[in-house]
Picture 1 (cartoon, rainbow, N blue to C red):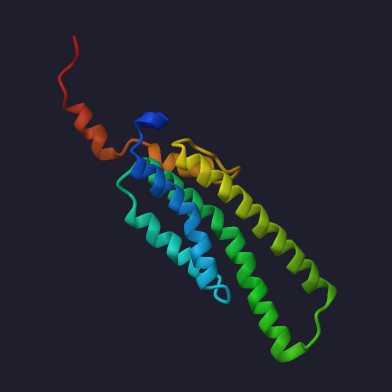
Picture 2 (picture 1 turned 120 degrees about the vertical axis):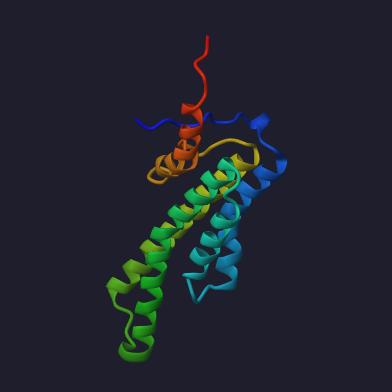
Length: 160
């Protein structure tokens, strides 16, 4: 059975950690604005942000959740860009399938943006907001006890 580290209360989290956790969700907006034609740039920015902010479990949780939740929308966006390029250079015809895929991609991006804003506000308050598929996975990786901490615990004398 996996053991987990205790989750900190909002008043136990430093303001810097709260702002860094909030920044994990807003990183996507900056990358989206800079790399609209290249939808993979926001994933690269999220990966860099995750690895630069691993010292705090709170920030690590929010950075990982932000990264994992960007994956489906990024895949949809890449597919849309490739399909659009193919239409512009080869087909010159926007069929109903493309329009449906475009509508689905826009809807997925809007849902992702809404949930990211909610999660960023919660992170700024020092709270957790668990995304439906990615929250549990992010919690598991950010708050589980590492093997090195278990080894340290085994060498302690018994408590009386």
